[in-house]
Length: 508
Image (tube, rainbow, N blue to C red; front, side, top):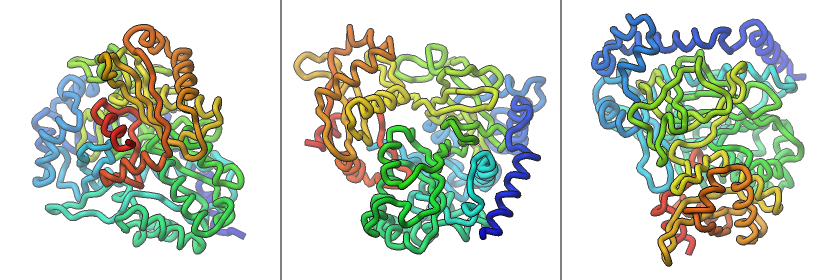
């Protein structure tokens, strides 16, 4: 009998019922987050330059903060401030960060270095505990609370640099797990530190029979590859034959739906799927209840949020933010509207645009979904296709054709014969076959039906679609040639013309 599991489950349920993790007054909680951040950083170089003392004395500190501090993207924040913070203390946050997170980025782009402070790690762990408390909302056996948790991260082998360590955020997080996780965390720090993805996954597969895994966490595309390796090495029919108590998968990084069919085919029976919004810049949201994949925004855990409408109020047609965009705080957002997310964090990120767009699905519950990227927005000829719309088009393609498209990318390129734009799709199949002409018809018809801007573009400047079908492994091979494979790496859903032509040339 799982005595300790029953105790843990009872404690979680008691705390969840008596002390709910969500704030009763979200607006007040957000103002408190901003005030605390400004107070903590007012004596830093950034705080003095932008006069945090004056902002703190204002009648409405949110308006004063918006007025006094500009919006930063990575390049502006890094060039003006974070480069100094890698050498000197008290630049954008007190002290000097012990870690810098290398962002996964997109193919061919230089990695970004995001500061990760002790306070930021504590913030991430607080959000993680809040998500764990929400397990009280799910009908889970007490036994589960004594099982292992397999977190598929990037390599936890961090590189020493000038007094700090750097690596991808998932590797930094598993290198700084709280003590209570040490007994249940798998694959263990020794395997997690193996730098090569293929070797790391092989070791996981070999050690898998020794573990009793109840929960998985990681990006779905790489989790599928890892599970398939475990099944192959151990000669299984499905993953539940070796981990019969597997009950939860905490996904994140990319939309889960395009991978659902492939993932569920590896199981013997359904499990709970929980989505998370964990980026290099922080842990922002998590799935808090069954029956939805929407995530609850973490409003009371150390981060302050602002929102820029992802339309003509905030961005031009190329996805570039306007010089004076409309900016809202949590009190003024609407359901069903795409917003670019700005965050201010205890890592010294201030009004920082991380590049994601989100959409609120339930304001009463503070729930949202990631709808795409500010730049992963295909609008070269006015088609206005967000990543969310592209994902749904692929889901429709899979449903109508019975295909299993696992990865994809699309971009606008000019035809050599006349210089007119076409949309070039590259579809990566998990298995089986798919006729490119049939795929073209389904994608085109679906997008014209659900997106009036796309339909208009197809009648004018967007002259055609081209579809290329390849095994998904060929797309991963393209990532591998740039040393981007495994862990938290994501295949870009939208590519610029130059990068798309490089992919086509690679495919031959």
